[in-house]
Length: 196
Image 1 (cartoon, rainbow, N blue to C red):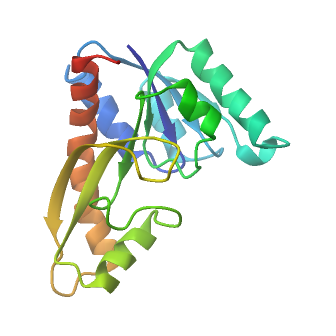
Image 2: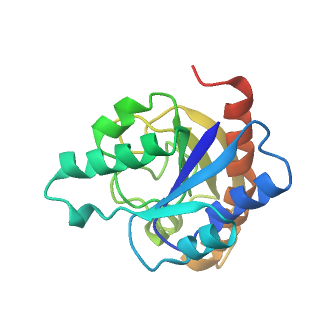
């Protein structure tokens, strides 16, 4: 199964998938395409180093969402993609793209959904919200993508404690370690049980 990984930044979650593939932990799957929402991000260098085809598809480069969705779908179809993984991808996927890959798009979110999810909850904003709420734990969630935001069925979660004196940055680093563990495992699980 060909996998596309959609990214927007440094690509540490992408690297966890590259490492899993190299280690033989993504049986029956191949990282075939990386799509970045912006040029010049380090994730593109990670893709190049791993020999994975990469393209930049910037939403602002298209006249409307329909044109953006068309460009994204064309890239996925051309690469024969069977599974799409959002790994720190900071764009909301157009409904047309979600409908084209039902049950075949996964996202990693840096909190224990359904808490601290939805519009505006990304990056450090999530960890700031966890600390502001006084939560005693946080973590990461891999879930299916539907037409809502962070609302799809949960595949895998793992928690981490929130420690006294935590800053958003310290909590983010701890959650990132969990992301790097559970994202490849969730992909392996989905590939192993087959796409509906």
